[in-house]
Length: 187
Length: 147
Image (cartoon, rainbow over all chains, first blue to last red; front, side, top):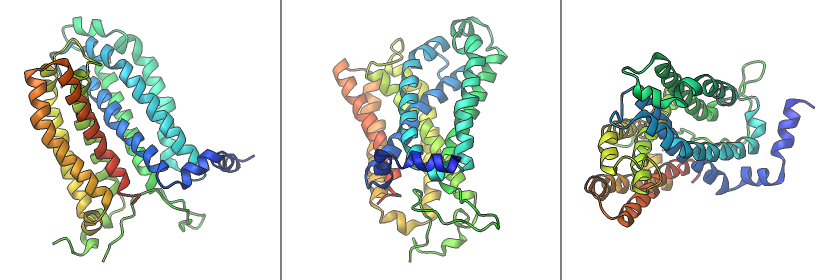
C-alpha cells in the first residue's frame, strides 16, 4: 500500500470522518490545541527565559524547572492528543504537506534529541545551575535551541493551512474544504 | 474607513506576510497568556508554591505587557487585511469581547488579588476566572474561520 492509500484509510475511520465533517467538533479540537499553546508554550518560554537569565531571576532555576514539569507534561499530552486527532482526521491533506512533515520532524526527532542531550547537564541538574556563579554555556545553548524548536513548531503548525499542493506543471490542485481563514475581499 | 482597496495591503498581496504576522500573533499570545497562566497556577495553588503570587506577578508583569503589546499590534495588522469581514464575524466579536474583559480583569481584580494577597479561596476563584477568560480568546480566534 502506498502512503496515500494508508493515509486515506486512516482518515476514513468512522470517528475521524465525523471529526473532519463536523460543524463544532473540529473547531473545538483545534481551539483546545491552540489554547494549550498559550498554557504549555508559555511555560516552556518562561523556563527558557529563566535559564537565559532574562526573566523571573529571583526564582531559582531549580524551582522553575521542577515546579512546572508536571504542567508541561500535561500540556504536552493534551496538545499531542488533539494534534493526533486533527492530523489523522485530515490525513489525506497532511501526509504530503511539507509544513506538517517538518513540524513532525521537529517534534519527534529534534525535540527528543534536545531532551536527551540537555536533560543530564541542564534540566535534570538545575540545582547546579543555581549554585554556579554564571549560567554555563550549555544551559544557554539548551534554552536557545529549545526556544528555536518550539517557535518553529508553532510557525510550521500555522503554515500547514497555507500549503497548496501543486501538480507536475505547477498548477494548484484543488483540495476539499480548507480549514484556514480565506482572505477574500468582501464588498 | 473600513472600506479601502484591500489589495493595497501587503498582508493580502504578499504570499508570506499574512502567515508570518499570524506567527508573531501566536508566539506573542503564548508569551502573554503563558505568563498570566504562571500567576494563575500559583493563585490556584497548583505550581510554583515556593513563590508568592505577588512575586510571580511582579516577575512576569513586563513580559505579559510585552506579549500583549505585540499580540495587539499583530492583531490590528491582521484585522486591517479584511476589516469588514472581521467586524461582522461572530467569532471575532466573541474574541474581542473576551479579550477586553480579560485585559480589564487582569489589570484590576487579578492584579489586586495577586499583589495584595487574599484568602486561598478567593485566590483560587480569581485564578480560575482568569484562566477561563484567557482561554476564551484563542477559542474565539479559531471560530473566526468556522462561522
